[in-house]
Image (tube, rainbow, N blue to C red; front, side, top):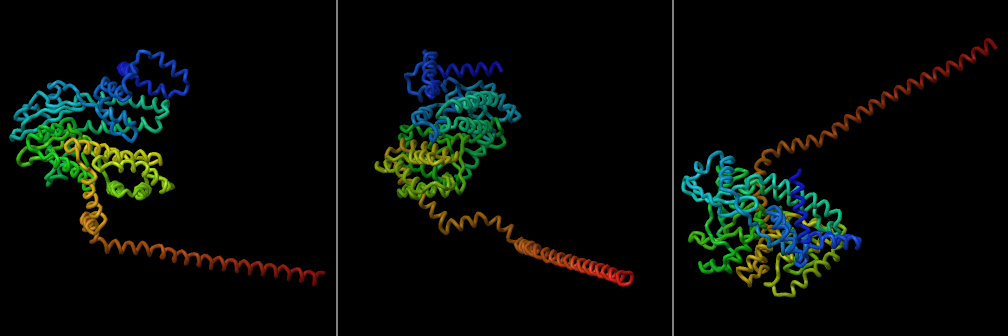
Length: 521
């Protein structure tokens, strides 16, 4: 409990130091109260922009808060642009932890010391982040591998800081006027789930395995193989990948890599993941991407770090493709209709009003040359416009928008003249034709074929059972009618007997009265 108070005190001190309380003070309804707070915290420095002050505060508070800022930067549908841009600059630079701790973690998780597991193991880590660090090693069969080790005691640290974040979010929700729109409680809850998912390295290994399988025959993307015999929740061992970081453009050019092709290949990889597989790497910033210079795979992308992936179902993919193609054609009415048909806009929403809002949002963009239009910004502005009509943007689409911004920014670093619209449009049109036309129907039938092979032999029995069930109500009804008729007949006989009895009694009574009057009158 004492440690919690100490940590809370530090958070408050840092928040006041960087003037973060000013965001709340400015929302206070009473001017005198605002003036009092301003005088009380006179020693604050408010010269830097608010986004920069927030970034510096998170960096001082430590790796968990840095990661929170990184996740927060992806919620551009909620954050003001100046804050989102500044948070996107946060770097997960964390000093490595002691190699002896890493060795102990490997020994506990895999049941043997690294010297027994590997032919060689490099004690000095090659990369370190807030959640884990990476060591190079070599398996006994000669394969080079990368060993990712979870930081010891991370769950307790994360639970501790998350509890304070939930408390802060609750407080902010009550006192900040803009809290209803920014939803601090929901944002912290989303971060809570994301962070606990990342603590399970087996989940990351499974994500990598799925992505590798999806691109097994690809000429565009390489994904490291996971060695499952050496994987656990705290340690994973994967194929070591060799390449040049994609941010080192001069080195890539010196090696003879075609940067324009690399740029368009990145766009194709992204849309393949989204529309073909519905499963995409959602953390494709430059630090997680290498480019192969090996002659056998020259110029291919190499993906790393699979802690964050996004998934889309057929409904999501259909919604996105319809919206993108409608944008290409500047068919704003279709965009509005797609929102309402998807159920994300209330059914009572007027199509013409939503169409007008989307047009006002997008027409200024189209006045610029196509190569200067940001695809990700268009999607972002669409989400922001939708919010005015009570449309709740789905989490998987927010993740998609963040990834699209990454891909677009990366592509334009490689090729400043990249026209993302021109590159993406043929792919989307081809995908729509495959989905809507005969090829799409045949693919869906092929996908359902294994299920049909089990159902078809059972059809005669299923039909017979259905006919029995259909006939059963009629048979029961007939039997019920027969019973009711029998009961009615018995009732009629009883009523007839009672009527005869009463009639006989009345006649006998009248006859007795006549007899007594006639003979004894």
